[in-house]
Amino acid sequence: MLEKQFSKLSEKVRGSVITPTNGEYEIARKVYNGMIDRHPTAIVRCVDVADVTAAVNFARQVSLTVAIRGGGHNGAGLAVCDEGLVIDLSPMKGVRVDPANRTVRVGPGCAQGDVDHASNAFGLAVPAGIVSTTGIAGLTLGGGTGYLTRKHGLTIDNLIEGDVVLADGSFTTVNGSHCEDLFWALRGGGGNFGVVTSFVFQAHPVSMVYAGPIFWDVKDARQVMQWYREFLPQAPLELCPFLGLKTVPSTNPFPNELWGRKICAFISCYSGPQAQAEEAVRPIRKELPPPILDWMGPMPFPALQSLFDPLLPAGFQWYWKGDFVKELSDKAIDVHLEYAANAPSELSLMHLYPIDGAVHRVGRSETAWGFRDATWSMVIAGIDPDPAKATALTTWAKAYWEAVHPHTLGGAYVNFMMDEGLDRIKATYRNNYNRLTEIKRKYDPDNFFHVNQNIRPD
Ligand SMILES: Cc1cc2nc3c(=O)[nH]c(=O)nc-3n(C[C@H](O)[C@H](O)[C@H](O)COP(=O)(O)OP(=O)(O)OC[C@H]3O[C@@H](n4cnc5c(N)ncnc54)[C@H](O)[C@@H]3O)c2cc1C
Image (cartoon, rainbow, N blue to C red):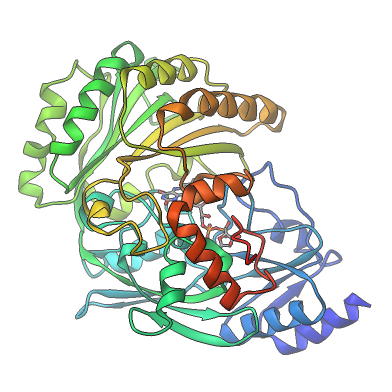
């Protein structure tokens, strides 16, 4: 019966409708996180807004659950559902740069690298994430942090406009003067309010950067972390060093003698005038113990953005949890060092991403994003290619998070959350949660879009 109806949907769309009998189904249902194994009833690959509208109307009429897929990178696997329709936007990849106004229009199927590639040709960059394969749509709707955040704000702070297909199948363009409530909610509220079919961003002149990793042996980690918490508030906003507790991967291009060494790392980007880059980085090199590896140097921005790609291909096991952090106390550092020492795999990590500077210039209730006062967005991630390690990765990340959680602000970046329940979602949006609920009630009263970090209309 449903097969017959899907053939009707096929007639209405220019893209393809993939059901379990289709040879592409097994690939099409997979997402980035190899821990996620869901079987949707069908996947509709949309090529344009008309396809999205047809898919939304179809799913509503036959009462199918809908999942929206941008880049498929969500850790909790929110781009795919069991027994529902996946609205897969991956074919909608257009990027149009307007160099005169320094704006970039981005299709919802674009990955970070698509946007970096197109913008860099004009000497521009959109402030977003740090890994080229991440979907720009899901990243943006959750907030978006990266190397340009301290200087230019979150990705949502650079969002000028969005096109949205709503739950009733209607279409609207939202910006600072039209559908302001929905525009407010989209800036941090995730995929709760509709399918965003186009984004317009403010871009900034960023082309060559001075960037890369510096590693210290873990024996120096306490000193590096204590120094970092004092250094960051005084560092120029063009310099964004994020801190990691990690292990040197046993692979090229890392020097053989460092393979498997536990480390404390800065992975930094200086995006200001290149003549001033070495001076900006000088305190890191002068005031800390000698590092075991220093690969900071000049590179094009897209090269920095794809630095991690070979280490993190799709299909690995991922379990992560996050929290926002204001201060890095000595007690918190104790917990970090204890748990990082027992990481269950070489790729497992703890990162602290700076979200100070320009992020703090926007008021707490100006967008749906609730943690404008945090200094860092923390993520603890258990990662490994081997499915047999899934339990160990999950157990470690949960235990680490439990131990460090009392030293944090208590809510997490929605894009670093697994399926953690309503209380965690409320903790993330703080006082903005009630307004989000009202807007959800207005635009999606039946909670049609619920495969997400769900804001319930009731
Ligand atoms: C390797 C890696 C690196 C990362 N680096 C960063 C980083 O540097 N900065 C950062 O901020 N985050 C980062 N993230 C987290 C990232 O923001 C989330 O994983 C995000 O969900 C990715 O977006 P996506 O489009 O790939 O999501 P998908 O998995 O495709 O979708 C996730 C959810 O987003 C919503 N959604 C997606 N597209 C749309 C749309 N067009 N309209 C409405 N709703 C939509 C839906 O609710 C969907 O369920 C990283 C993740 C990974 C795995």
